[in-house]
Structure formats: structure tokens, C-alpha cells
Image (tube, rainbow, N blue to C red; front, side, top):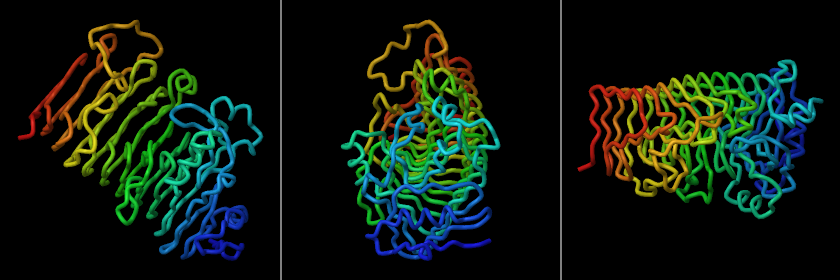
Length: 420
């Protein structure tokens, strides 16, 4: 393996000089199976674009710091909140799909089906830090009103993604966002989208940690995620556009990991391409408002099925959030998500926008929250939740259990109550 040290391409680790061109030159020179190295020091950079069969390594003591110059983040189309739209480039990106010669296909759906044109084998690793400088960039990108905020890392149409050991901090929006990827591994890495190293809160919104979006075969193992919003949010497109693309997120394992702040592991609310076969196991949730949420309001369509939360410990002593239209319990499945008020008895005609939620299991779960309801389960009258299983669950909150429009609810060795 050949190593391409960015200093040899002219990068300067002084925390001031913008090194976008020098680092990109190292990336462009990097051959198949080789590595670009960010050595110790603080390297300021704008948007970088990775290619197939390469490793991008930020070594211990190194920081890749996002530039605050908006000119360093060109605008291009990719998915955010379930729809293809004009966005600022992120700090780390895959090669712009327009360079592949299939712009028309890309423009309509963002997805490349042709395996010969997809990227493969991209690794982001090292003991260092990728800091997207999102507190500053979020404000600048919002004020410019040119496009949607970028993220720290967006990888698209890539088969074989590994992100390991590294720390990724303060994204302008969602932190790590793979779109239309397969065989994605996050291993022994840390995402920090809530607090700076000195404990100061980042000024962020929509600060999700990790959002696999229409991805297949995703594994998160031995990671720590601290988030201002959902720690993990599993997505697959929104409404008619998401249904037309029709690519689910499936075969997801999230194991032996720790989640802090924010809202735990969520499915949705942009899930119109479907989500299936998700396992969250042997995980701890510390001061997250929720540990599990499934969100699919009217209009989304799609099917969410075969989701398991097993061997979970959740303790929330934070009073930062309370039950509201956006979140309704430590464990919640909500088809009236975002509704300030709703009538759970008022049927509407079923159509392609009616989501189906079925086969959701909670097993060996302990949850104590001081902030909201213990368990909230609410389907639609025209499409009830189907087959919701609780086994050996002990959950308590300010309020206990609320259930509506649910068919096939099973509780074994389960106690749901109110905190004393």
C-alpha cells in the first residue's frame, strides 16, 4: 500500500491555511488500494471528493477542520430529508455523480443501478478527528439561501464503506449520511454532534448522528454516538418521490454501542422506500429522550417490518425534552408524528401514502425516563399497527402506556408503569 501524505502535496497544518486543493490533489493521485494520510496537525479544508478503492486516514493528533468559506462547498443535487434537492457539498463526499456521464439518471433519482458505474471500497479511518465546523457553517449556509446545509460525511452509490476508529464532530446538519450504499460498516468510531470537547453545546439543529438512507447491509458495532437529534435515523426517501425510487434500507445491525443525548435509534420519518430487518442489540442509551422510535405519518407509504430492540438499557435523567408532536415516549411508534392534534378514530381512505408498520419486537429492555411517557403505540384507524411484541420489558416514565389502533399486541413478563 502506498501512502500519500497531504503535506507532500502542499498542505499546511497551521489551522488557518485552506488546504482543499492540496488534499484533493493527494486524493486524485491515490491509486487503488492506497491511502491518503492526514498527519498530525490542524488542516483546514473545504469539500473533498473520495473515489473508489481508497482509504482516507486521519491519524492520531490530526484534525481535518471544515473551512468557513462557502465558496469551498459547491452546490449539487443529492438527497436530504427524503428528497433530491440542491445542497451544499459536505466536508467529505464521494465523486460528483455528474462526472460519470449518466447525469439524467442521477438527476431523476440519485441512484445508480449500473454496478460498473457505482463506487466501491471506500474507507475513512484513523485515530484523529474530522470536524465539519457546523456551528459556523450552519448559519452561513442558512443565511446564503443557496441550498440545503451540507453534512460532515455524505457517501453515495458506494458498495463497501468502512468508517472506523475515527471521531467525527459538529456537522451543519446530519453528521454521517450514506445514500444508496451497500455493505456499510461503522466500527469503534465516535460521532459527536451535541457537545464540543470542552463541554460547550454546539449550536446545531437536525443534528442526527448517523442516517443510513436506502442502504443495504449496514452494521454499527462498538460505536459511541452523541447527538443533538436522532442518534441513528434509518431512512429511505419521502412520500411519492421515495416510493418512486423504491429502495429500502434493509439488513441493519446495531450492536454493542452507546448512545447519548438526542433521541436514540429511530426509523423514519422519511421511510417511503421501506425499512426491514433491523436489529438493535446489547446497546446502552444514556440521557436520550427515547431509546426507540418508529415514525411514519400519513403520506409516507412504504412498509416498516421486522424491527428488533433486544438487550437494551436506557436511563434518561435529562429534562431537556418533553412529550410533544415530534416525540411521545421512551418507546414510541407513531403514525400521527408531527400532528399537534389528531383524532385517532377518524378514518381516511387507504392509498399509496398509507404506511404499514408490523412485526416490531422489544425484548429484554429496561427503560427509566424522567422526561416523558414510558411507551406510546399509535397506528392509524385505517391501518393499525400489526404484531407488536414486548417480552421481559420493564419501562417507567412520567406516564405509563398509551395504545391506540394496534392489532396483535403481545406482552410477556412485561411491566410498564410510572416513575415513583
